[in-house]
Length: 191
Image 1 (spheres, rainbow, N blue to C red):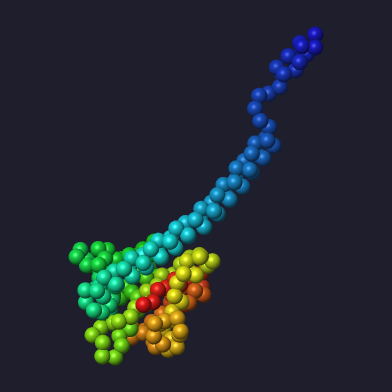
Image 2: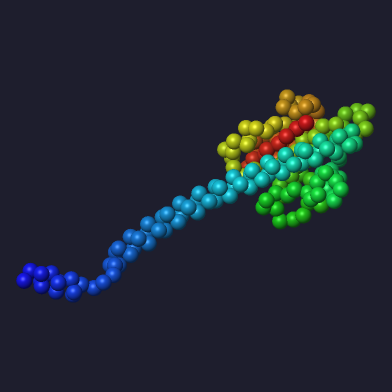
């Protein structure tokens, strides 16, 4: 007889979840989704910063190749771009919207920063300073750069203690390379 009571009791209950149970599950899913989105945003910034540093290394290799052929560095990165040149295509920032085809494009966050120094009586530029503005403030990549201030007359981190011939930029980590954006951080290499 007790079997029949149990059988009848379960037959009368509605099948499915209560509203409270559904709300708890939806809340947990929403919380997990927001954590994943936040983590992906940080991962995207890191990936873009890694690409920027790789682009600067590519530019550095192209500059050294150009120097090997000519005995001096170019006065603009665009001089190294072309089908038979050191760079088939000019590297651009991963979030750049425009093209970086000419010398006027140098020294922007979209097209990276390039400055050169021509010592007195030299055939052409003998030193360079390249940089990119990163997004991650605490990036370990910022510990591997030069921090040259090629726009300052005295700086012991640059190869020379003089303002670079082309004007220079700030390679300090505290802000973007043009020092106008405090949400970006300058990664630079000087030679």
